[in-house]
Image 1: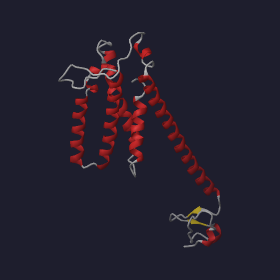
Image 2 (image 1 turned 45 degrees about the vertical axis):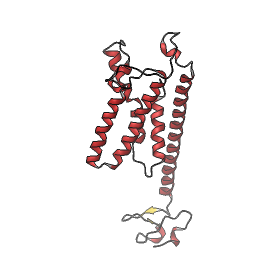
Image 3 (image 1 turned 120 degrees about the horizontal axis):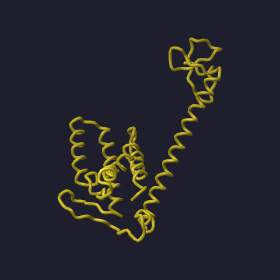
Image 4 (image 1 turned 180 degrees about the vertical axis):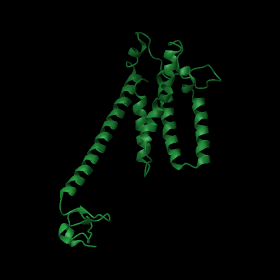
Length: 216
C-alpha cells in the first residue's frame, strides 16, 4: 500500500473514539502516528542503503519487534496504572497492525524476522512497467489502496467541518449574548444580571425566558 496508511490510522482512531464515552484526547494523533510509523525505515533505506535493501526488511516492519514493544509498553502501563494510556496504546497498536496487514497484501513482509528469512505476500504485483509504483494501481490492490485513502480523507474533512461549525456556533452565541444588555455576567459568580434589577440579583440564563422573571 502507498497512500492508505495515514487515513487508515485515522479511521481506526475514530472507530475507537465512537465507542468510548468520554473519549480521551489525542486518539486521532495516536492512530495516524501508528498508521505511518513503520515506514520511518524508508529514511535509512534511501539515505544509507541507497535503495539496495527492501525497506520491509528493517526492524520497524517486523511483527515480532512490535509485539515486544507493545509488551514492554503494557508492562509499563500496568505498573503505572495509567487508565487512559491503555486506550492510546490500543489505538496505536491497532494502527500499526493495520499498516503491516496492508503492506502484506501487496508486498513482501518478513513475518518471522529475525528468526526466519522467508517472506509472505498475498498478491503478486506486476513488474511490467517502470517505475514499480506505476504498476500498483492496476489490480484490485490499487483500488483498495485508493479507496481506503479516499474514505479516510472524506471522513477527516467531514469531521473537521463539523468541529468548525460547532466552534463558530459557540463563538457567535457568546458574542450575541455579550452584546445583549439584558445578559451581563455577575462580577462575583457565574450567574447573569439584568441592568434593571441591580447588581445584587443574579438570574439563570434560561434560553427564551425573561431574565427579570427567573430570580434566584
